[in-house]
Length: 92
Image 1: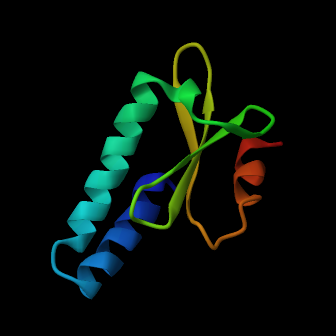
Image 2: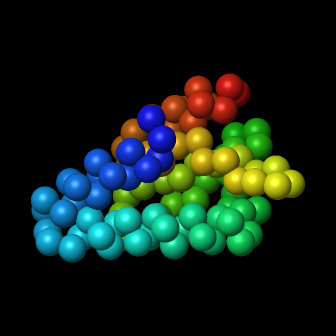
Protein backbone atom coordinates (compact mmCIF):
# COMPACT_ATOMS: atom_id res chain seq x y z
CA UNK A 1 0.00 0.00 0.00
CA UNK A 2 1.47 3.35 -0.98
CA UNK A 3 1.66 6.35 1.36
CA UNK A 4 -0.92 8.09 -0.84
CA UNK A 5 -3.47 5.35 -0.16
CA UNK A 6 -2.74 5.36 3.55
CA UNK A 7 -2.96 9.12 3.88
CA UNK A 8 -6.13 9.20 1.69
CA UNK A 9 -7.86 6.88 4.15
CA UNK A 10 -6.74 9.06 7.04
CA UNK A 11 -7.75 12.19 5.13
CA UNK A 12 -11.25 10.79 4.63
CA UNK A 13 -11.47 9.83 8.30
CA UNK A 14 -10.43 13.31 9.45
CA UNK A 15 -12.93 14.92 7.06
CA UNK A 16 -15.60 12.74 8.64
CA UNK A 17 -14.64 14.08 12.06
CA UNK A 18 -14.62 17.75 11.08
CA UNK A 19 -15.13 19.46 7.74
CA UNK A 20 -11.79 20.55 6.28
CA UNK A 21 -9.68 18.68 8.81
CA UNK A 22 -8.78 16.03 6.23
CA UNK A 23 -7.58 18.72 3.87
CA UNK A 24 -5.43 20.13 6.65
CA UNK A 25 -4.04 16.63 7.24
CA UNK A 26 -3.19 16.26 3.54
CA UNK A 27 -1.56 19.72 3.49
CA UNK A 28 0.52 18.79 6.54
CA UNK A 29 1.78 15.65 4.82
CA UNK A 30 2.52 17.56 1.61
CA UNK A 31 4.47 20.20 3.57
CA UNK A 32 6.49 17.51 5.32
CA UNK A 33 7.27 15.73 2.06
CA UNK A 34 8.43 19.05 0.62
CA UNK A 35 10.80 19.51 3.56
CA UNK A 36 12.05 15.94 3.08
CA UNK A 37 12.82 16.69 -0.56
CA UNK A 38 14.76 19.83 0.39
CA UNK A 39 16.82 18.52 3.29
CA UNK A 40 16.05 14.94 4.31
CA UNK A 41 19.15 14.41 6.41
CA UNK A 42 17.97 16.82 9.11
CA UNK A 43 15.61 14.11 10.35
CA UNK A 44 17.08 11.52 12.72
CA UNK A 45 18.00 8.00 11.79
CA UNK A 46 16.04 5.52 13.85
CA UNK A 47 17.25 2.19 12.51
CA UNK A 48 20.17 1.63 10.15
CA UNK A 49 19.67 4.05 7.26
CA UNK A 50 15.96 4.63 7.99
CA UNK A 51 15.01 8.18 9.01
CA UNK A 52 11.86 9.33 10.80
CA UNK A 53 9.88 12.56 10.50
CA UNK A 54 6.94 13.32 12.79
CA UNK A 55 3.93 15.28 11.53
CA UNK A 56 2.91 18.32 13.50
CA UNK A 57 -0.58 18.30 14.98
CA UNK A 58 -1.46 14.85 13.62
CA UNK A 59 -0.26 11.60 15.23
CA UNK A 60 1.55 10.27 12.15
CA UNK A 61 5.16 9.40 11.45
CA UNK A 62 6.93 9.11 8.08
CA UNK A 63 9.75 6.59 7.74
CA UNK A 64 12.06 7.02 4.78
CA UNK A 65 15.43 6.24 3.22
CA UNK A 66 17.80 8.77 1.65
CA UNK A 67 20.35 8.22 -1.08
CA UNK A 68 22.24 10.64 -3.30
CA UNK A 69 19.36 11.05 -5.74
CA UNK A 70 16.06 10.43 -4.00
CA UNK A 71 14.03 10.06 -0.83
CA UNK A 72 12.11 6.80 -0.62
CA UNK A 73 9.10 6.84 1.73
CA UNK A 74 8.76 3.44 3.37
CA UNK A 75 5.71 4.07 5.53
CA UNK A 76 3.31 6.71 6.76
CA UNK A 77 2.05 5.29 10.03
CA UNK A 78 -0.20 6.36 12.84
CA UNK A 79 2.01 6.81 15.88
CA UNK A 80 0.21 3.97 17.71
CA UNK A 81 1.11 1.46 14.99
CA UNK A 82 4.09 -0.84 15.41
CA UNK A 83 7.08 1.14 14.13
CA UNK A 84 8.80 -2.08 13.02
CA UNK A 85 6.56 -2.07 9.94
CA UNK A 86 9.07 0.17 8.18
CA UNK A 87 11.73 -2.52 8.71
CA UNK A 88 9.65 -5.01 6.74
CA UNK A 89 9.34 -2.51 3.91
CA UNK A 90 13.04 -1.62 3.87
CA UNK A 91 14.19 -5.23 4.06
CA UNK A 92 16.07 -4.50 7.28
